[in-house]
Length: 306
Length: 274
Image 1: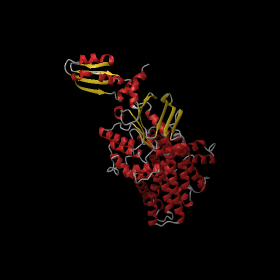
Image 2: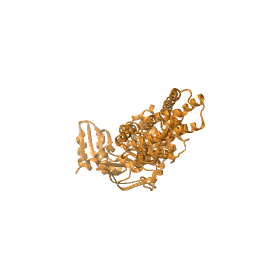
Image 3: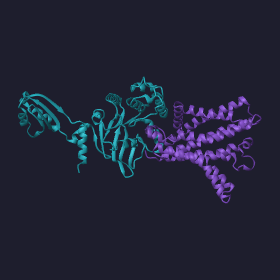
Image 4: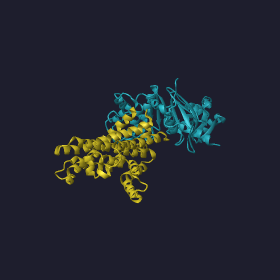
């Protein structure tokens, strides 16, 4: 696979403030990466470093084999598409005029713009002034400009912040279709619950450091969080279940007809098999694997514990 | 340079859309026409040279108005984009920082040139219809329009410099107002005060010439009021008041007032942390 982005031991400081500290990261063609973290964790700085808008204080950034922050690397940005956080446009111009302007800057043909407007759901609003657009429509226009010229690498910075659920869902539909088409995508976000399932790998940023990097499954294992099993049982039978489970579980909640326990992921199969004849006592069972928000909280908590 | 021209084109489009070009053209045309048609009283009906009077009146007006319009156009060129949040997106395109500064400047200069040529052109057309104009007068009028655009460009460059020096639009606006006050209103008064106090001891004619070149408004004034014999008579600049500053030198000074602030703005913006 082609290496598109490579960061090695990258640090960026602004005066006394360290925005990014010793980050190393590789991104290959066709991969999608979610950069997650609190506000101020260093996500936007990392995106700006990849775009070459700022140069690292120490370390090396390489995009498509070149240093993006050098004066001659402006051309490199023809191969990049970027959607900034809270994207803004000149309100006096129409969506189509703005896309034409950006296409001219990228030296891309302008006949594809109608397709692009249609792709983001703005086919009928292209000739309206942007000042009349809703936030969701401006964000879609932002997405359309990022897609001009089918860039090798797409960077989205907090793409869904402030959007209503329908606009968010539309955005992720577009992301998924881009992923199916083989696009390489970096999404910086703190909408943890949303991003799960829309990225191949997750990079967790905290205080400028990259504290975890990998697919959600790997991060889940690294966080060591228990699976939650919730049983609805016939009256007065929770005790029998607990007797059978023994030390394999931790009890979270217990009542006459309900039992919620946690178990280690690797112990799950044995636990369920061991229920044997007790299945007759169980009316319902649900199994909940810890989601990205819980994994993230655990990883951050571990990092903050001295 | 290609991206700079694309940005310049976009500035002109925005200028057309938000009525900047129309408003400026109408303002300049209204003032030029009223000066041309109503301001001919001093020359009377026997005046041989109505256009020379118009050049004097219009250039005096231009000194106040065009720098103001230019500064209003350019003071938020970069800082305004930054405050609106549109700068980061623009810089994520294949655009060098200097192309942003130069592109904005070229676009604003085109807006100013269109408005000046159309606005002052109305005055020339009115005169042509009424009196007919000689060839020499045309040359003085054309030089006035050309130098007016150059004066505007100098203040566009100064406004552009203000827009990269600060991080808030309001501060850039304050700097633009100060630039206008200093160069257009206060500089000459201070110079006059200096000359009176000095009584010719330190400020020789040569020093005075240099001091005049250090203000683009003065370079413009001297260029137009001493530009031709006919004009200098009406401007009260003929005979003993003649300056040693040749028109070519005055134009060079105006060009320098465009190039130096623009180069400084480019250098500062290129080093800016985003």
